[in-house]
Image (cartoon, rainbow, N blue to C red; front, top):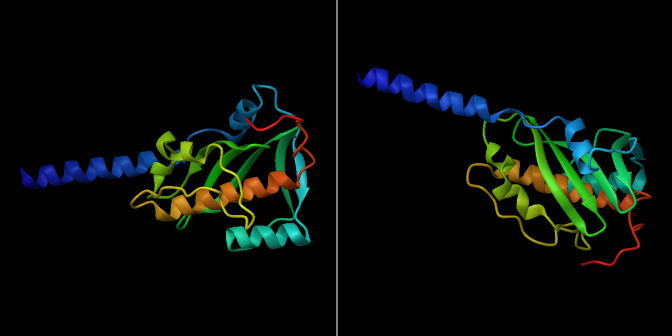
Length: 179
C-alpha cells in the first residue's frame, strides 16, 4: 500500500512539473492583443555600440543578435524577448508605453522550476515600472521562493524592454502627460 501511495504521489508531482512547462500564449496572439487586434507591421532596432553596451550591462551577457524585432505605435511598443532562467529560455511578451510597463506576460516557459512567475500575482508587480538613471527598475520586485533564477530573468527582460523602448522612434511621441 505504501509503495502504491508513493507511486501515485510521484506521478502527481511529475504531472505538475510537466504541466508547468509549455506555451501559455503564442507570440502572435500577444502582439495582436497588445494593439487591440490590429497590430502594426514589425519594426527592427539595430543593436550597435551604446545599445550593445547597455544591453550587456542589463543582461550580463551579449544579446547575441544584430537586430531586435518589435512592434510599435506612437508612445507604445511590444516586445517578445527571451532569456535563460536556469538552463532553458523563457519567452516573455512586454508592452511598454511612455509611462512604463503596461503588461508583462510569460509566453513560453521551458524550465522545470520557477514556473510560478507566469501568474498575475507575480507579473502584475511589473505594471507601471520604469527605469531609474542607472538602467535599474525604479521599484523592487518581490521574489518567489524556489524561482529566483526565473524572477531574475524576467526582471532583466523588463529592464531591457524599457531601455529598448526609449531607443525607438515611437518613444515620447504621444503628446500625453503622465497620469
